[in-house]
Image 1: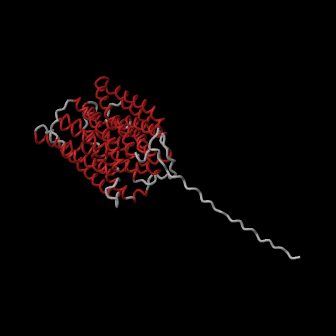
Image 2: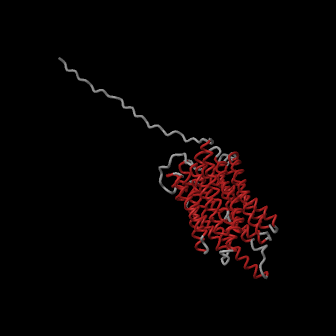
Image 3: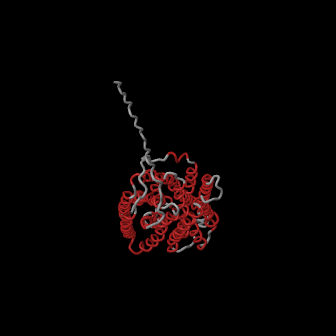
Length: 437
């Protein structure tokens, strides 16, 4: 009987490829999206609005607690505050990408409130430097990066105007806070004015933080620096634009009150000039966001970048009377706020991986930090040098000319920054002409 050899049965093994993750979509509207924008706007008003109001403190310190110090010495307080805000982006942007917004926002609220309470007790330079410069600077920094990135989680088509609405909160804060400070300093004194602001900030942020929530999944990449950004020449040119622009971006806000007083302005009107600049900035942030979504973010960024420089060269340097100075305040407030708003949305546009937006935004802010830190003190040193020189040659000083060096310094830095913005725009739109970029 023949034996039967059974051949083994080969079973075909079908390898099932893992499903690719669904493409990332953006709601571009809806209740949750707009509640996030509302919460971010309110925190931006109370947090970064204080940075825009530092010009009021600059003038107050110069005539009260720190009257024995130079304008440059006082400006270092605001400079270290903003330096910490921008420099910490290298770490905080990455922390947001990995861990989300809630912890950063809450920590920032508590630290900011504590720092303002300490500021209310401060009378010496080092005390004000530590509380307002270091403490408040870190507190605002903890909240700043979630506010810049959260709109990019919920909006794409209308991202620029959503971010514009958020950062317009800082300009609105720059209107409300100077008016409040100028009134309360005279009525209840420095200490209780700062405490009142601290209580207000804590309350408004406490009701805003629960509204804010990141939407995109956390990044699995724990590196703090996105090295690929350094090979992306579009990003590098945009960062160079921010680097040079930063040297002139905040100087007019901090010195416009002193400039107004040198033109014979009343103290009240000089106080309100900062509010005027920030009111124009609120309009600029929203308006520029509207046009950026329709004409392109880089296409909108370049005109406002040049407008900042033109305002310094053509308007500020020739202002001899109060009305001309107010015209400058309106134009520069509009343009500078527009640039600050659009620059962040441009970073999001040229970042291909959405999970890296926080990291690259932080890197861009770090690129701006040297100018943010050194710009106002350099301007103050130029002002002090020219004032001393004018006093020696004109027998008591020539207030009309002592600001010219400061104005030229700002104008040149802003012009160079605008030039790099043009180069960046050419790289982004290479081969695409004047299309929406």
